[in-house]
Image (cartoon, rainbow, N blue to C red):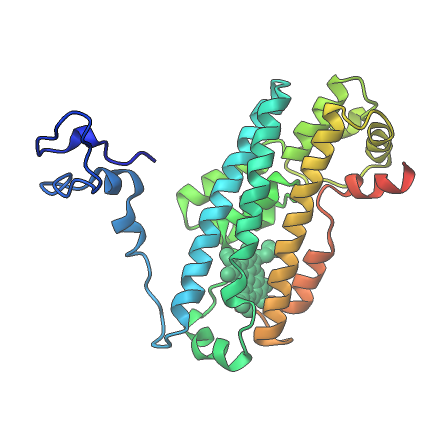
Length: 289
Ligand code: HEM
């Protein structure tokens, strides 16, 4: 974002004698251009803790920060999907590369919550009622983009028109993985027709022929753009797996084996989710190279 240019200063400035300090009069009459762009006043007044516990604020803000990162990452993967559809690999790789830095920042955001004791978490847990990250629509879009589709995951969002419409659209759109497999097929690789023509609203199931395609790509020229794509996707997969595991460990520390506020078995359910590999054939193909 640009800073106020010296020429915007209202006080006369001799040529070649630019002021060091920002101009305090910009925005004084209305809102500042910074506020118009960042909406910081809105953003910093969206924190409404539900308990009197001073430790709840960082739980709430960390959750909001993660929601913002989910939003950026969904945006990047949307850009990557579009670019893959038009065979524009450089643009897709740029977006995937940005998303790996964003995933790293997302994962670093666990720090303030990673060592909650059960007593610290209990101080505000009751106030959360049945609220759970499980009900995050943006996280669900992120999972849908990875191929982890499930129509039943729309149910919690039935009462929220915009969220529901966005999720329903995302459910029926090809995932990032679907777009990658279509690109591989256009490049002459033997991706089965059943995989290419599958219903994108169904959860993606790993396919041995897709594993064979990746084994072939990885056995070939190491500087090919498809190996570069495979590695960018592996970075994404690893970082998503790390988010799931950091979440699992933070949960285990904060609440042991208690039930989740969203009604699941808690840690046991999260363990099952964290065991799943993102883009599974990219991992299993490695045994055959
Ligand atoms: C230490 C604090 C946290 C604990 C103890 C915790 C606990 C849980 C539990 C038990 C679940 C399973 C569903 C349920 O029954 O509620 C869950 C799901 C989930 N949580 Fe958290 N959570 C914590 C922090 C966060 C934060 C900061 C986020 C950020 C948005 C988050 C996002 C999610 C998401 C997206 C799911 C669904 C995962 C999936 O669908 O696989 N959680 N959490």
